[in-house]
Amino acid sequence: MSAAKIAPQDQLNEYLAQSKATSFLDSTFSSFMDDRDPLSDLRSEFVIPTRGEMAPGLDRPEESCVYLCGNSLGPLPKAVSRYISEELQVWGEGGVRSHVQHRFGRPWVRVEETVQEQTARIVGAKRDEVAVMNTLTSNLHTLFAAFYTPTAERHKVLIESKAFPSDHYAVESQIRWHKLDPSQSMICQEPREGEFLLRTEDILETIEKHGHEIAVVCFSGIQFYTGQYFEMEKITRAAQAKGCIVGWDLAHAAGNVPTQLHDWNVDFACWCSYKYLNSGPGGIAGIFVHERYATDFGRNRLAGWWGHDKVTRFDMVNEFKPIPGAAGFQHSNPSVLASTALLGSLSVFEKTSMQEMRAKSYLLTGYLYHLLTTEFTSDILEIITPTDPEQRGCQLSLVFKDGKMMEVFDELSARGVIGDERKPDVIRLAPAPLYTRFEDVRQCVLELKRVVAEIYV
Image 1 (cartoon, helix red, strand yellow):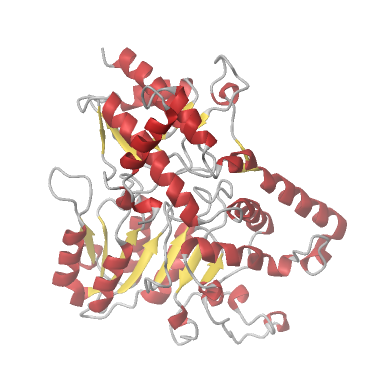
Image 2 (image 1 turned 45 degrees about the vertical axis):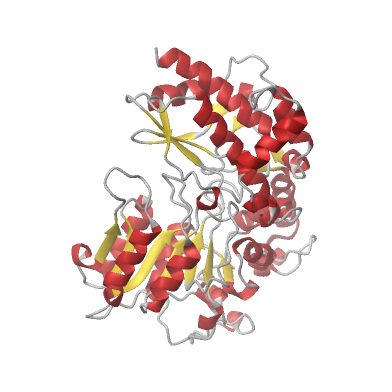
């Protein structure tokens, strides 16, 4: 049995005994865990905001804040500054010639290729199944334009009822684009009454019942609000058995949990790169298109010149010849600075693997889960993220009772603990394994205990 398959709590209990700490909140335990962490050196690859920068007036302003917000925006990898500086230097020295002559071997005309291979490894794809391009919702529209081909019988799209709003807007607008009525052509999967999570058996039941009417099943790999990691392979297989196309939004999954898009036979997927992939605000996004569609040139697509055959791209002929694979779905030449920022972050990922990150994430998130469930009562907070570590990534979503979520959030922020909030009552905390320490988790819980003691009196 791999380490990742052993229950995190069982591992933590073993380490507690080895550390000789008196409790999980003892600094001796967090120090022991950080000392044995094989990924601990990777933290130095990032610029973690200080306490003084995030919450002016705090004592020890020079110390790092507790940054648990990689689910929203990853911190700055130091390599990004270096790579971007190089591009600015090349731009200044070479101007337009830098498209083909580049001091650092990254000619702009092929800049997307510099981030293609590592991106493919992160999402479990072959190189030619991935293209780095555009932004997330634009890519979702691009993929729906190609894969949502409604007929009189098969015209429905199955999504989560609480999908990220941009996904909902995009799907609804695609349905309207085909002169269809979203109230008739959109199935929104609801959780059971009184529950936050979607049960896999309920999703499969919907697919079984309505599969003959469903053109596309489009879910998020990890649900943005609850942090639920869906059983992607199982859902994909069941939907395709009913003749449905299956697409995934991996905004909260890419760089967080291992996925195997190729092996799971996923039709298409898209993701952003500014969360767990740390490419910077508004960073360039990516798509996956399974290799079985590599030469499916008869499929309708939104075409652009960067998706045209590289050999004849600059011949400027008006006859579109798509590149085989995902690259054929590209539109315009990608932002060099945004692509290079992603390259800087991926240089950190090159030093580890998704499997190593997942092993640490099991323990790190398990540690946070244990402390939250043992140090706080259910009348103050409830964790709505799945208990089963196989069904979650880094993120834990905490519901705070009695309408006091914003008070808690503001107080945590004022104390240098950085998560994010999602109305009406959730604070999301995400101990990302590339840069988060066990000591960060401990400090978060200690500060939360102080905050709760002041607010819930």
